[in-house]
Amino acid sequence: MPKQQPQRFVDAFADRPALARRGLLPGRRVFTSLGWAVAVATVVSVTGWSMGTFLAGDDGAPETVAADVPQQPSPEPEPEPTTEEPEPEEEREEQPEEQPEEEPEQTQEQPPPRPQQQEEQPEVEEEEPEPEREEEPEPETEEADTVRQENVVPDGVYRLMPGTTDDRCLDVDSSGTDAGTNVRQWECNETSAQNFALQSTGTRNTYRLIGLGGNCVDVENGSLDAGANIRMWGCNGAPAQQFRLEPNLNGYVLVSARSGHCMDVMDASVDWGANVRQWECNRTPAQTWRLELR
Image 1 (cartoon, rainbow, N blue to C red):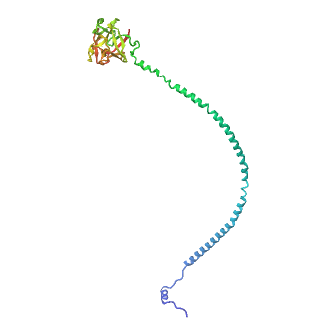
Image 2: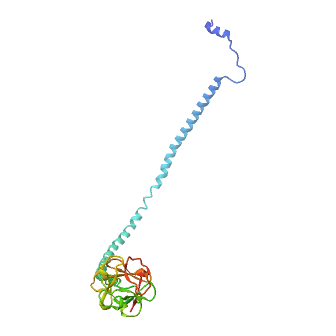
Image 3: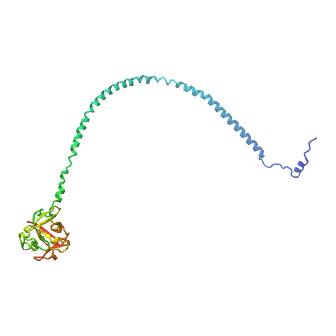
């Protein structure tokens, strides 16, 4: 007697009976089964190929080993370099024999240059003391008491001509020879009253002016005042009788070593008999004196 299905199962399909699939395509299960079959076949084929390759590689391994064996006879050419080695050894033995022969030659050549150096040293020592320091007296010539004019020499006799006008000279009044005689500006007349000897005091460009009777041009009473008179007085070496010559224009200014003032024609006069005094230095023609060698 056939087995009866449970009532529930029957009831379920009674409500919704199974319908036949329409179309020609198989069901999903068919495709799944085919896919697994193809995969299994692929795995089997790959496994078989890999095993074949592995086995073939093992068979080829001994062939490579057999190919290496005939290469072993290479050590046979080694004796050839051994035969060549003794030859350079003999040459090396000959070289040290030549070297000791050259060494004594070098030792013999070394001593001669040493005495040459010793001979050169004294020559250098002789050159060291040769610096010509004896030429230093040249600054002394620069310090020599000279007047910067072509026709003027130190310690000479000169005529002093102021720049106020032409044909005027420093003059001892009335050609007096007494101490205290005044000096003035006068027409140049070629007399001894207009001649003055410049005598160096030992200080660069500083002089005393000696005139008639051996008297010296002097700032009266050694005054420091501008306007103090200039006269003739007995030479005593005092700063009031010393004048420093400084170039100016076409001549020189005479600066008193005592006061620092300059010998000046009063009021820049051009007249005969104009007084000569000391005044603040202004380097005007009234204080500029040309020196004419006599």
